[in-house]
Amino acid sequence: MAGKVLHKPAAARPAPASPATPIRAHRIPEQLAASIRKRILRGEIGEGDALPAEAELMAQYAISRPTLREALRILEAERFIVVRRGGLGGALVQRPNLDLAARQFGFVLQDQGVTMADVHRARALIEPPALAALADTVTPTQLAELEALLGEAQAFIGAPAAYSHAIETIRERIVGMTGAVTVALLMRMLREVVERHTAAAGGLSADRWAKLQRLSLRAHHKLVALIAARDRAGAETFWRGHLEEVEQHLGRVAATRVIDAMD
Image 1: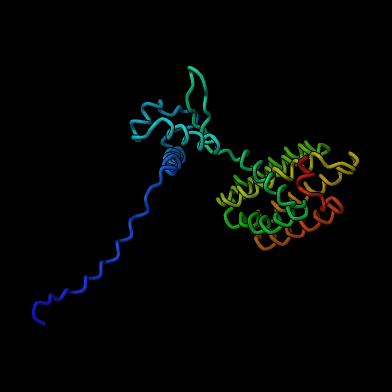
Image 2 (image 1 turned 90 degrees about the vertical axis):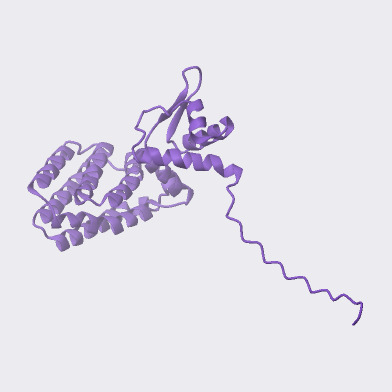
């Protein structure tokens, strides 16, 4: 049509590209803490070493003092550093502590209302195959070490807490000899609960404690003998039966909650 200007429809605008996830300001302290934590875990900064001075860290990471201090608070809460205040202050490195982790794990069990029976069932699932695994690779040197440790444990018969600590250490050592580090750590986490429960348990005479400990020691000697004979299946079956007997001996104590056993 004459004199009439035809307008083309506007082309559809392309959808804006999705931006990369921005680094939010509140995440910077967490990222800084993660960087320092990784250096500690890799051994680049050793146990007891002091972190560089604040000014050096601020320049190194191009961050502000408040950001740095928030990152240090994160690491302090995680127990990766100990911060000393004052003129001679600074941050000293400490590596992860298994005893502390075990204590915290005990607190989680308490919070969940877990009973001692549940703790012993967990051990029954973990220990038999783990302890029996040593039968595949055991050496004369390792057998001699275990026999020596059992001899030392015998000296603690009649002392519930000391004997419990000695015998639990032996069981962890057996697993450690297999190279199964994760399983050994799990056993260590449960040991804190078992040992404290044993120390707090009452109602048994000294003679009764001594009798139970002698039976326990005999069972451990038999376990080591089965391992020495490279009888993996026999060791696993025997140890599973032993733990079942232990759970039966618990009786009413099995219903004790971890929070009460640790109290």
